[in-house]
Image (cartoon, rainbow, N blue to C red; front, top):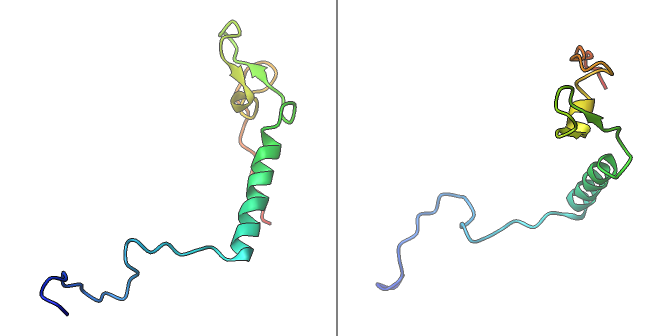
Length: 82
């Protein structure tokens, strides 16, 4: 080591400037997840509703999953084991 070079500790970790590249399998899985997310938010993919009492100023898909047609909160469905 020269006197001008800063001393580096060998911690077994990659240097902070090195970024690991994903393999083809990880890229394919990520692409599939993005397509699923995009499909969920395509226009018309999910019903939109108006939040009761908002006079239509608040609406969207976020509330549709949580309220019924009368504006009452839906009871959460039990999660199914895959």
